[in-house]
Each structure stands twice: as C-alpha cells, then as structure tokens.
Length: 113
Length: 119
Image (cartoon, rainbow over all chains, first blue to last red):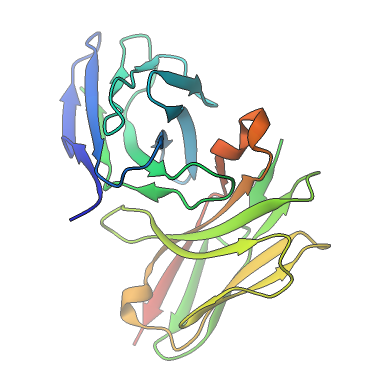
C-alpha cells in the first residue's frame, strides 16, 4: 500500500538525550515535511524539504535537525537543545507544485521523562 | 504572515443533522489554497476538502461542502447527514500559491474545532 510510515509510534526520552524519528514514504513525492502538534493547538512546521539533499527551516526549527539523503526518507532528530520536546510529531509529503495536497503519516508521540 | 482562526473550540450535532464549522483567515495574497483536515482519535490528519481561491465555485465532496467567501476571508465547512464517524477534530488550513518565496511549502493551521456527534 502507498503511504507514509512513521516510527516509532511512541517514544520516551530522558532529558539530555537526542532521539530520531523515522519517516518513510512510497508515494514518490518530492516534498516532505515535519510538523509538531501540542494540545489545543494546530500543527506548526518544523522543517521541510522540496528535493533530495535540500531542506529549509520552518517556524519552530530550533532544537531540531533533519536530513534528506533519499527521496523516500526524511528523519527528524530532536536534540537536547529542544527545551520542551514532549509533543505529537507528524510527517507529511506532497508532490511538487503549487497548491498540491499535503498528506500525513500517522504520527509519533514523544515524551521526555 | 497569514493567520487562520477557528472560533468554535467545540461543536455538537445530532446524527443525520447538518452542522457548519467556521473558519476565517487573514492574508494579503490573492492566490492561495484552503483545506479542511479531519483528525480522528487515531490522530492521523485526513484531508476532507480542498478549495482553490481563484475558483468561485464552492468545493464539495459527498456530504462535505464549503462556503468560500473570498472578500470576507471566510471558509466554512458544512457536514450534511452527520454520522458517528464524523466525530473528530477539524482543522482549517491555508497554503500560499507563491512558491518562489518558499511560503507555498507551508500549511498554516487554525487551532481546530472538536465535533461531537450524538445519537
């Protein structure tokens, strides 16, 4: 089945540790995105990539890092510099082109303990 | 910067009835796209409907339709014949059409409306 796969679905991290969230898509989309969702809020953009080996900061990039070495993969690392990392993280992808619909994965819960 | 406002944190509708969710947005752009996404308890974001700002005709998808008022910057979602499976958070989102600036890559979301469907 075509889609966006995020793993793990639930992750616990100790303070001071880095953690990487995986995102893989087999939709042949060029563009990929990472969003963060906090309770009572909509989604906020962390990073996005429109093509392999290129990515741009979104609205809340501080404390996060990404890579885009393959078209299908866009992992997100939550570093120890992220002050409040506990949240729900959503990966998304879309075809290139203005106004194309952005499709989402099932999300990953990150809890800092 | 664009903003999206959903002024109804919660709404309730009886099964088989019709409900309208409100959304307003602020932008200085003339060309853009608007979306409604549904987020059920599983938390996955599912596209409900999409509207292109340059099209005057309101988008429809089965029981879902929009009332797009460009001058008023309003984009409401109407759900007809509501079903129990419609219970979810609904998010309105804006996407610029100005790709060269990079802003077209960004979806700006409202804070959502929680819809309850009762028997």
